[in-house]
Image (spheres, protein in one colour):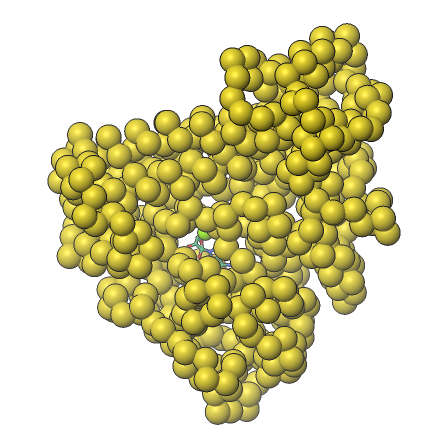
Length: 496
Ligand code: AMP
Ligand code: MG
């Protein structure tokens, strides 16, 4: 292993331009360090589609040098590895300093998809590891890899994952597992917690530097706007609120439960980030809690919209020294309350195949959600069957999902009356809105069981389905149906 570390840095892509804007914020923001090597690294999966979007050759990435580099065993020419510091509220309580305890940022690369940062998650201890071992296990790394790609496939803003590598190195969780590293990709990994960190410490100069970096790089139109007293930091808060509202509306529409919506797991770019105990709903249970460690149900599915607002409020408080006026900060936050319901209604109308906005639409949405909840109906199966029905298929497969058939018939009569004249076109749109393939917990679980035995083929299957969830894949019909009974007993905790 030492030999590998001593090797000269390898090039990720000839002529690739690296940029280190986050590192350029200065030493108050990070610690430069090297990943800790792992023995006998091997490829678990390479996301060839993302590699191609980034203009990176799959040949290098999947080859042994690529595997060593993205496990942290071999330095990449041009990279500048570091761990960032942030703080945050965890489960509603101020947790103080946290930081990249096991993620190491390599830097930014210029790609056809714009500047993207690369980060190795699970690459060893950092000054922010606290009691942690700096590692991630194969199980959770596969979940993050597939989960983020599933969100991408559904059109939901998210960090991405380029590859997963594994090592036989034992890692102790509830039981002994093995180590893995996920290469995450995003324009930035800055979280609400970064702002909270410098604000709570009264480091207002650093707070301003961070905010200026985020505004100038990602929200340039915050400057020069007349709105919110012409305050660029209030404009930032407003735009982050809007993006977060749009993101959470998409979560709710598709039935995505994040599981750990702590402020350190909230992206300043409104991306879904930090996939841990996440879950796509099977049965529609509005107060479902997907995180076994969340005893109070703080992050239950139907609480996510309010929690997002709570988190934005923390961000607003952190930005207050820059905004300077509490009324202006509160005004910026108001946008969440306007945008979230508007976005959610729009998403639900899309799911129903409705055109335009009409009186009674909200009742139609609420009506079906109540029926789904009362019958604990499988959420993805319902939407897909409804889409098929509208596209010209049979009604019975939808109706049969509801224990109270009469109630469904009453709802369906109103719904059909509201459908646009061209039902076939509406149905076709619905089939591109309501996925056939959803990355359900039990599918991850089965792929992970095989992967632990060294067979990664099911990870590849799920990756392909995650990337085209609206298409028919006749050879994988069995992965589109109801979950087995045992799926209800899967316990996913924070342990990862
Ligand atoms: P999470 O809830 O997974 O987002 O993690 C919260 C904090 O704990 C973050 O600062 C992580 O970097 C850190 N952390 C989680 N697991 C580990 C680990 N195994 N080793 C070091 N730090 C960790
Ligand atoms: Mg986190």
